[in-house]
Length: 97
Image (cartoon, rainbow, N blue to C red):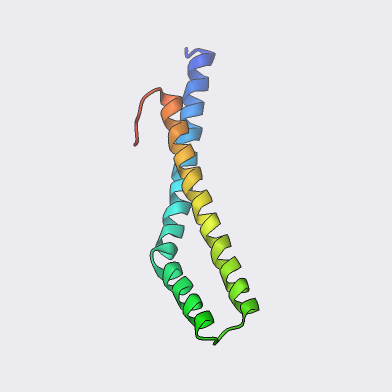
């Protein structure tokens, strides 16, 4: 019969692994979007503002949207790393680096 501590460890590892899989899936989905499209979009917005084809208000609006997307991407990346560290901590070894 398994002890309560062993059951708890198995449960912790299972939860950590599931969290890692989910955060990895979300990160990879966002990563595909962010590969270069957003950087190109920002360059286009800067050029449009410099060429006076958009107003300052439009530039600020576009930039805020870009910044929010970048922050969300960074948050997903951080959550993925936290999940990885949590799995390593739960197992007591560096399973994934």
